[in-house]
View 1 (cartoon, rainbow over the protein chains, first blue to last red):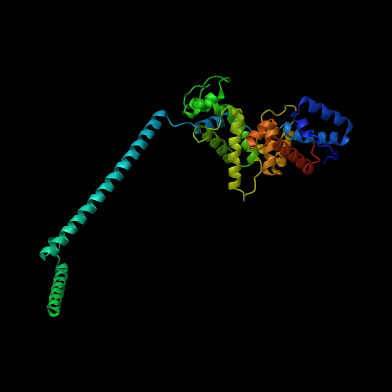
View 2 (view 1 turned 180 degrees about the horizontal axis):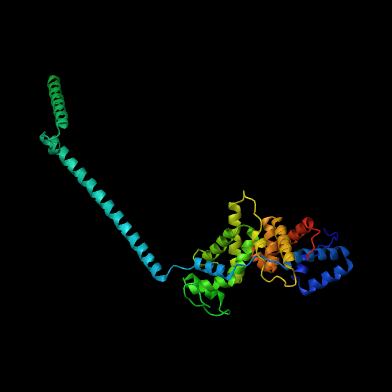
Amino acid sequence: MVDCANRVRLDAYHDGELSPAERSAVEAHLRDCPSCAAELAAIRRTSGAFADTGPREPSHEQLLELARSVRAEPSDARMFLRLFRGTAVAAAVLLACALAGALYLSQRTKAAAHEAMVLDHVAIGSQPAAFATDPVSDERQAEQQVAMAQWIADDLRGRQEER
Amino acid sequence: MKLPGGGALVGGPAMDEEELLVLARRGDNAARTELVMRHGGRLFGLAAALLGGSDADVNDMVQETFLAAFDGGLKAFKGNASLATWLSGVLINRVRKLRRYRRSRPAGPLDAFERQPAAGDSASRGPATQAQQRIDAATMLDSLPPDYREVIVLREWQQMSYAEMASVLGVPERTAETRLTRARRMLRQRFGGYEPV
């Protein structure tokens, strides 16, 4: 650690980062400050430890391999991919719309059929055609009809008694 | 020069690098190869020095850097810094991400320095001395925290100015200078007796 109280930019001086005026000022200071002069010598030694060595460089073949690994897709392939992606997106949207429409229509048809069946059943008292072949439903329908008839009869009787 | 895939080099050394990058982003493979041949070696060395890890990691980092520059969302290069500085910044960000990802794992030895001689070694030095000095440099780098390791590598091996270091690291210039001063001081405290042979 340098003992000098002045905050001299010795590293910047060593690295050639000072303006000519700053450089002159540091050089003037170094002439009178053995502590900073010793610090600068230590900086030079440390920096010198890296001066004659360096990181490993790749071989020419390694660079060519690297170049191969970052190649763009061939333009034809890119065009095909772009076209394929565009078509796929459009097809997906159309399919989704078609499915939604089909689902909507199907639900509307079911609701309409159900409504017609109920109206038909209530108005005429007949067995809905859709249930005609189902014995379980037939029994249930018959029970409901009997219960309904019983309730109507009771209701009429009650009203007559009130009169 | 014959390029992989049979292409030819785009332009000469004087060709504007920004223009080359535009071509590379459009999928021009000759431009991509040219940029890799111009900057790949330096980026490879930078990644090896920063990571101190396996060749696979180094290759991955350099490849990711070029792919991000060519295919990724990196459109920030406007020519205010040199392409070399900008690519170094991209690589350093990727190395930092990798380091965060592997924070629990200690850095490995700088085998990249120990296995092969560095290009440009002085012919006057004997092989044993060269190897010793590489190991010394590797040991010194390994002793530093990542922030300090970065500034030493950028200054001593990439010969970057303080302004370039600040740009690459995304910090003010005086911060880069302070880090460098502290990193050198730390090395002096730990390897005080070291003298380059």
